[in-house]
Each structure stands twice: as structure tokens, then as C-alpha cells.
Length: 100
Image 1 (tube, rainbow, N blue to C red):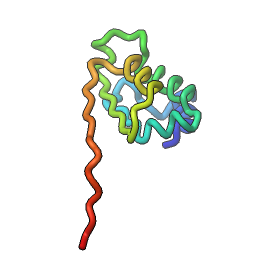
Image 2 (image 1 turned 135 degrees about the vertical axis):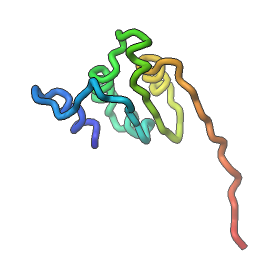
Image 3 (image 1 turned 90 degrees about the vertical axis):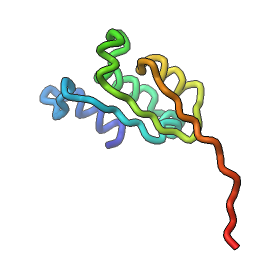
Image 4 (image 1 turned 90 degrees about the horizontal axis):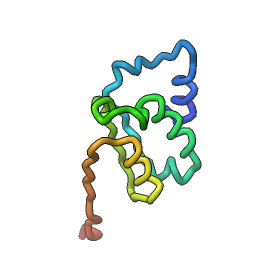
């Protein structure tokens, strides 16, 4: 879903999300989300599901996966604030391949 739709559903009194059962949060194309102005919405949503003030044990029960073509400084702030003991997998650019 879009970040705005997720935020709307999280803040409804009869939320459709059962946050106590949440195990995984996936943010795909996070660099694009940040560059398009979704920073405040992402903070709001993640604050609901992964409170920054929560203990490391509480945060570690929910796994977060972030996928991005680039790693801007703003994303580093999200990683530090919302992730516990993150693992980074960096993929090097392959040389251009041409078919004859």
C-alpha cells in the first residue's frame, strides 16, 4: 500500500492491522519515498509499529527490510532510529554486458 494509505489505516480507531502480530516491515524503493516527500508519513507509520523509545528487545521482534538503489544520509537516520543491529548488503554495479 502507499505510505498515506498505511498511515490512514494505522490511525483508524478500528484499525485493520493487528500490530501485536506484526513480524515484518518492508520498505521498497526507500530512497524514492524519501525524495518524494514521504519522510513525515514514514516516521509516523514506523513510530506506530516500531517505536524508537522501545527497548532493543521489543524492536528486534519486528524485522525491517529496506531496499534502495542508493543510500542517502536521510535513510541512515531511519536505520539508526528504527532498526536494531542492522545488516547491510551492498551490491556492486556489474559491468555492462552486451550480447553479440
